[in-house]
Image (cartoon, rainbow, N blue to C red; front, side):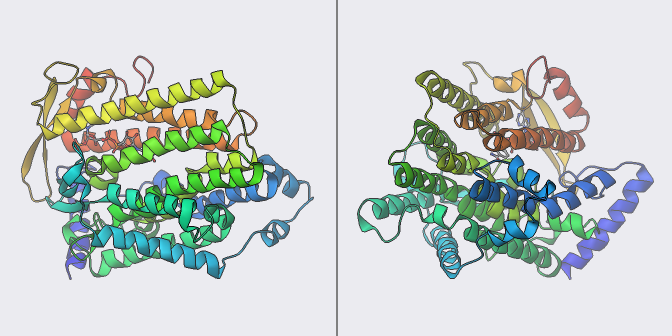
Length: 475
Ligand code: NDP
């Protein structure tokens, strides 16, 4: 069996590496082959606590008006027992199961059955069949990019329903928020477990599988690189984009509708959160072809981290600001609102411009202009598993000359703006900026470790030319 051979191969490679005294050699960039104790401890921590963290946040809002400390204090002082909190938590309902099944099925249909038509009439939009990056095994996958169309159809139907069809209330998501959490968890665990079994029994591409031999690490970080069902159903592209990111804007709209229902108005803070996060989501789908070149698709394997993360973590924790504003309808003064808007737009501009510069540079192989000049770059080479040598370039122009991950800096500015839109009453809406800082700093270090294994001395030349990671002169 192909997967079995690949596991044997992995063992041999591990043995060879140890003999050579190297941990990563050519053709082995990507997810680790060996698991150090720190990674294992972090993974066990996340597997045990991430679902509880999500529950804790959502429960704090439902039962404690979004106070993160009040439930803990209640428990520590004996005022309440865990069972009291649990007994007040809504359970899974048939209604929520029905809504969630319909939602996921509808997104599968949009993803699989309607080839992209947006690229035929939207100038500048890249959709339809596109190629991903070269995988460590040297494979180039094709993807049907139709996320923008799925987002538009979904939202047109949402607004049609809210305005005149009235099949369901626009508050439907908020009203079923905790029962839907159980459904999202069921899907998240089911898809991660299926991906693991599939990696062992019928991988899409056995050469792009990685087995560390550690069950928890493999479950969390994934075995298969690009698991697929059939030719086109790509797990990574579907789960990240559809149940996760298409849902993001709908969830925010549902929270806005709830504010309207409860207080008779939608606050400027809620509008800011909807608009700024809406821009971010729309940007994602407008640039879905670019997403094929990001770390999620190019380097991460598909396991619980992506599968459960896309189904549960993303829709529940990235939308905390909107949820908070349902319980605390903050009306910002004009100066505060303008400040948030400017920070959000500036962050978005930096995020988009930086990503665009890299994308343009890579697509044209450096034959382009960045800030009006021919880009400067460092030539690099790397080798895939089969020994084929590839050449690549790292640009040092534009924002990529300011810092090695200035796109993350822009992202963090935007993230901070969403949090600031909620005022200063509680810590809960600030979870997002804390989480994004940890995520992106960790990602930065992870990416640099990988690039260093991939490019070797060429990476050293690049870091010498661009010495800072996020903030020029500081970090
Ligand atoms: P990048 O888009 O920065 O991609 C990093 C890769 O780009 C590297 O591995 C390397 O790949 C290549 N690269 C690095 N430096 C250069 C250079 N100077 N010139 C050309 N290519 C270079 O990172 P991500 O994929 O992590 O992020 C993409 C965006 O998504 C970011 O803006 C980030 O903020 C956002 N993001 C948002 C998240 C969220 O949850 N909201 C989560 C994660 C990311 P190669 O091997 O091809 O050389």
